[in-house]
Image (cartoon, rainbow, N blue to C red; front, side):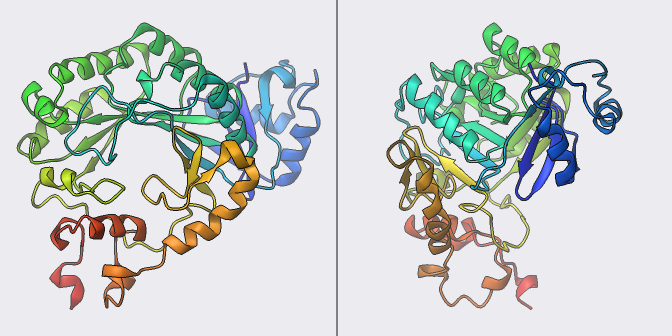
Length: 372
């Protein structure tokens, strides 16, 4: 099993270690040097041996290159990141969910394996498994293992309810993820249950947090702030600090990606995210999203004109930048807005709010002080 990954990434070249946040950028000449001996019994170049010791405390002296490093080839498609919605099915029924439907369906294993190999061949280095709830998919463990062994750095976006299972913990120990992000929906069983509409959800999630901590698996907690839990935000922060390496807070609740308004009812007044000014996005150019059926779109929200990778193969991705650019045009309710130059909402998301007939105060982040 490889200890390091050497890979092209968006016009650069990186060295990364699975399960570690630290990495390094290298010039093309160093990439070529390692690539030329990738399948050999030669030992690693001195510069890489020294860097591995410094960055990760890793001693690879005497280890054949073929056993130490996985070298990923250059590809003509420059997609460094992707999200894979392995299944929309979920064992929670969250009131704020942005998915219009949560059908438990998708590709058979052979299709999933073919799709993951296409993602690899598209250049994807960072891959996020999402859902629905990815850990309930019958093929998740095999899909994760294939992606990891293909040289991808993996994030799992999960509700944490299956994290305690021995087969999951063992998988993450053996094949370390780049990141595991667990959504936190409250600090008590009552708040958790009212939002997820799943009795016992809080107990399941805390059981997973405890198991991950005992196994040494670093977590990031995403605190989802709603009317059900805003009153216990400090307790949510304390819970996150107890179990996670870091935490992020999200207070903006979106409609479904298809533009229906139901999730907006749980937004807590006064917790609209103060994100940075939207100045563009690489979605569709260096990043893309794939749904359970292998349909590729610019992102999770902008799902217009999907490309059927299972029918078209990687050639279909050549059309994605143009599709993405068309969705980024500010039309409809945002057309002619004098504040569009300092808007904090991307166009596909703004379109979903407009189709949901959402009040401006649920997503438009311009305050009076910014207008002056």
